[in-house]
Amino acid sequence: MKKAVIYARFSSHGQTEQSIEGQLRICYQYAAKHKLCIIKEYIDRAKTATTDNRPQFQKMLQDSFNKQFDYVLVYSVDRFARDDEDYGADKKILRLNGIKLLSATQETSVNPDGTENINGILTEGILVALAKYYSRELSQKVRRGQFESLEKGTFLGGYMLYGYKAVAVEGQTGKRIEINEDEAVVVRKIFDMYATGSTAKEVAAHLNENQIRNRQGRPFCPNSIMNMLKNAKYTGLLNYGQYTKENYYPRIIDAETFVAVSNRIDINKRSPARMKAYENYRLSGKLYCGYCKGLMTGESGTSKQGTIYHYYKCFTKKKNKDKCNKLSVRKDALEDLVVSLVLNNILAEDKILDTIENVVEVYNSSLTESAELNILRQDLSTTEKHIANMLEAIKNGIFTESTKTELVKLEKRKEELNKQITVEETNKEEKLSREQVLFFFKSFVKSELSDEATKTIIIDRLVNKVILYDDRIIIILNNSDNNIDESIENLEELCSNLPQLSPPRGTVF
Image 1 (tube, rainbow, N blue to C red):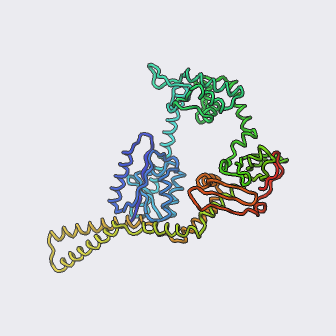
Image 2 (cartoon, one colour):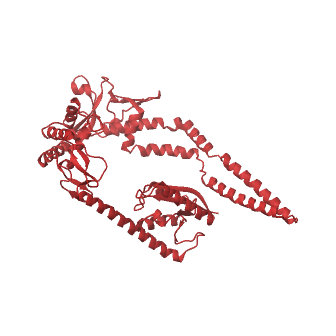
């Protein structure tokens, strides 16, 4: 019996969950008629077919490389794709994996038995072209309706920008955008304060001190202030894709004030202080000087060639140069060293052998044949014995209407059991070996060291405290007595020296 999977999809336009149920029902009826065993369903809800970037669709394509099914069954070809280029490319992936595409309601290039359907080749091409045409025509109609609403100044819906409100107009459909005067006062205050020299942090603090809250009743924060300052809608301008309309929003901020604010944002973005603020010092608050026990904090300095360097410096030395002689340390090199030591310590082979054995044992034990599969096989064996006995009785001349009826039931039962066993066996996964798990751990160490986001996660979640000397590093781990104490006498060989900076000087790596 040939194995198949069903792919079903509905878009958000005029379709609901019932559309999926209908597609599945028709597909299962088609599969039963043509003796196809359905082993899995892939369903994308509220996803357009104008792109193949759909989670379950991509999962189906990925699973096709395992070659565990023979057909992909869809209700109609436009469920598979509405773009002819995607349709051809994705269908080619299936074909290269030995898998054919079938439609439960339309002719395709293959018949249900796998043979080529000459008429279906032409039909399928026409259906794909029509699906693409329909999709683009519908999209144009939707956009045309939206643009007409925009030209009339009608609110399209969604979240209303702070400072405005949507008001119903008597005798008209849709709502008109008007200024919310209570909120507009706050918007003008925000722009005026920033334009005259206040920072976003100072603006937020001023509003919160005066008990002025956002629309959700929460305090303003610097990020929300910056988002408002960058929003040209307050000048009346609307950018909607390639469509631009002036005075769509009633103007709250004049053009001169908005330009002044934008210029100041641009200047602050390029300032050295701003660049330093956005540098991610992962060891901040966790790194301590081994000599004076004070915190080491993030700093930046510029070489004579104008290159900016980031490093950690003892805060005590920063305040009083004579009090601590701890050398400054290059940020990236120190963070890489900490991450490397932590991973090598935690994932060292001699320390994770027990873990690996446990992973292999637990995973493989979960793959043992299910009780359901055993029961199905026992049931099949019993059924086959009954059929054999029945055939033997017929050979001996015992053939009545009752034996005929019973034999038909047994044959049908055998077919159902074979189908269920096929599904269960297909879904079984292969066992893991100890070498595979060990390889994964070692690959993890090598690959994750190069990922910036992973470095942050490792330091944030695993490292409690780092004590740094000029020739030694101590790393205290979270929830572990297995701390790290390593000599770093070869530090200058591992890390290039920083050039003289202004400020500071005396950095080892």
